[in-house]
Every structure is written in structure tokens, then in C-alpha cells.
Amino acid sequence: MGEGLVRAFPSLGAKVVSLDLTAEAGSLIAREAGARFIACDVSRKDSVDEGFSEAVKHLGGLDVLIHAAGVAPGGAAEDIAVDTWTKVMSINATGTFLTNQAAFNHLRESGGRIINFASAAGVQGLANKAAYSASKGAVVAWTRTVAQEWAKYDITVNAIAPAIWTPMYDKTRASMTPEQLDAHDKHMLQAVPIGGRLGDVDRDFVPVLAFLSGEGSRFMTGQVFPVDGGTLMMR
Image 1 (cartoon, one colour):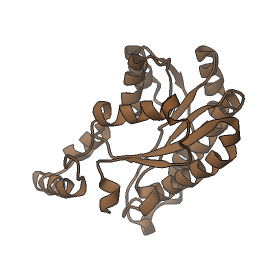
Image 2 (cartoon, rainbow, N blue to C red; image 1 turned 90 degrees about the vertical axis):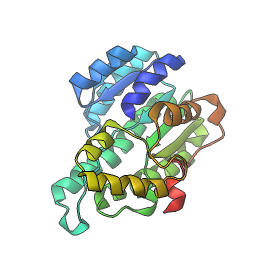
Image 3 (cartoon, rainbow, N blue to C red; image 1 turned 180 degrees about the vertical axis):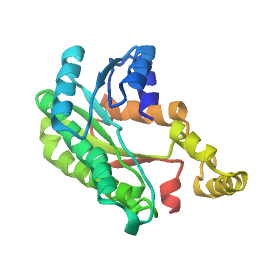
Image 4 (cartoon, rainbow, N blue to C red; image 1 turned 180 degrees about the horizontal axis):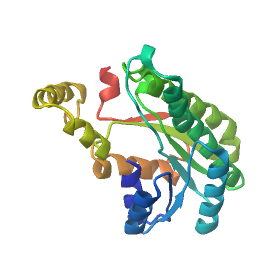
């Protein structure tokens, strides 16, 4: 989803800097899209602060942060290793905290938009994704809290809970047997009221993020917006 946004936003007139841990792939995507790439580890404060400083210098200021970094390992809750829990929390939750703080330091004088990536799992939980669900629950709570605190600076803070078709989902599908894939697709027909499948990045996702990034959303803050074809209401 982050790749889709990096590719789409320059065509909408935005000046974009992409921060990512994977330098080779990230720099290629940014170059193809007409964006700037900066290597950054969102779990480390020094890396985030350096990355934001360089990004803001390149942009000449900051208007919008879209924080999309995340990992989602699976497994039974009782089997989660401490190292796995720590990694998930450091990227999904601490990464949100550090990037939002860094953005705030550049937005407090002029206002702006912060958009975090939450998940339906952070609202209702998701079996075999306990660490991921807990981290996304933290993202939701953080988003709603800083939205209250930073409103006086004219900064809106919202989150999205997406159900979008991504390259990672392609890999998941490729790992299924034909029988598993058939059962999965039949389940999706019931689970996603609109279309019976995950949404398309360009058609279903980018327009929502563009709206939340713009002036039309100036009176909306502290919200979690499902972009999921109605999946959340079906749980």
C-alpha cells in the first residue's frame, strides 16, 4: 500500500519523500514515481529524526505524514516469542509514536495532517495475530489521544483500517493449495460485501488518502476510517 501511495501522490501534484528500511527497492520505486527516497528504520529514534530532518529540508517544509510501516507475523498467542513480540511492537507501535512525534515537531507552527495505518485487528482482534492486533490497538489509542492533544496546533490525526490487495497478499495466495485458495475466495465473497475481494490500491485506497491529506478533511480528527468494502461491519 505504501508503494501505491508513493507512485500515485506525485501524479496528484504532491511533492513526496518516501522513508523505508529497504533501500534498494525503496529507492527504485521513488525514482520511478518522481519522489525522493531516504533510508529509515522507524523503530529507532535517531534514524527517524535524521530521516525527517533530511526529508523536510528537501521538501521545504511538511504538510502531511502518512505512516504505513508495519509487520504482521502469525501464530498462536501462546507460542509468540518475546523477540517476535518486541519486533512487532517496535515497528508497528513505536514506529507510529516516533514518526508522529517527528512530524509534530515540524507541523506545530503551521498545522497539517497525520494519517496512521491501523487495522480492523486493532479494533476487534484477529485470531493467530495477537501481537499484530495488540500493536494496531496501540496505534488506534495513540491516534485518538494525540488527535485531542494536537488539535490546538491545527494538526489532524486520523487512522485508516484497510483491506487492500497488495504484493504481500499475492504471496499469501501463492502459498495456498488449490483447495485452500478456493475456500479462501468463497469466504471472501461473504466477508467483503462490496465486490467480494480485497480493494484495489489506485481505485479504492489512494482517493481516500488523498482526501484525508487535503483541506477537505480539516474538520475530521481522531477517527479510524475502514477502507475495506464493509469487512469490519461483518465481523
